[in-house]
Length: 232
Image 1: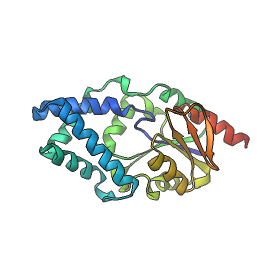
Image 2: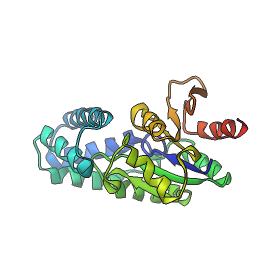
Image 3: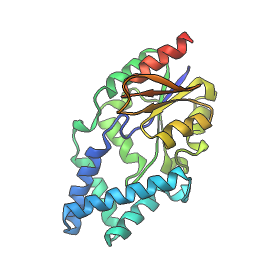
């Protein structure tokens, strides 16, 4: 194994912390009830995730599409969505970093492996996520960032997983991707020829669920998975 690719949201960073901050800021900007704003965000997220699992939508406009759908649902100008996400980035604190995330990155780094992040975008650009990773010290371990709005593709499309492989001259079978979404992260990585790890918080432990795939209850499980692959 030469490269470990991490999803970001609900793998390294807590998406709920960011969405809560975004909802607060958006409700202030539009003068709307925060409950209505939260409901609009959740409904739009579900719609976008369903579209991406079917690879529906324009990869060139993955970010803009989600912003416009939310603005349309709430009946507001899309610029307010952009402002709310910018304010949210300034608002969040270190509680956004998931437990064990930094320790896991340190553990992978000690093994001498390349570390990248491969992330979809929704509502805010990949540059904002990169800023948060930098702000809270996670970028110290990461050698490459690949976000959907910059790659012009989205998970589970092959292009998203192939981009870091090409950047570091690594074969698919020499890389492993870990993330919390079964269709986007686990199946997308497997179909591109990588090893894959699915973070399932309901999992009772670490188990192999595919010839090249594992299920783990949290991000720390990647360290045990790497050991098992090395032994085999």
